[in-house]
Length: 160
Image (cartoon, rainbow, N blue to C red):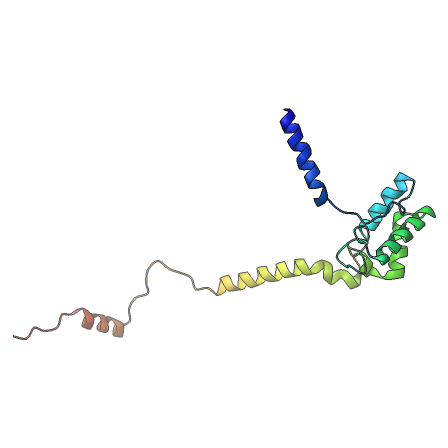
């Protein structure tokens, strides 16, 4: 039992470096844990404009740090989560959102997977319809084919 516990602790200790790394500096964190949790939720959904594939919560870029501070300042002013996100989007554009909103200009982005699947289904059905039907019985031979077959099957005359 003790060996298993030690093995588990060793595995957890070795796995620590592979856990998620957050770039939030402790000096940035809010003292109010509820506000800090809201700030983390909001910043997890905002894109780092420098890294572009990370949230501002995960990025070490100076711009990401500035965005995290803006989020926390807005929360301290009493803004709702939606108001904070709207404030950041107004300043930096829709690209800052990791999950874009459903608008007319992002409709194609949201519908593209469905359109591709529907197009694939239509294409596959057209291909299947064009395939010739396989029948079990072969088609009957024409008169010419029958004569050619008889000629091939008759043995040659024996010369004596």
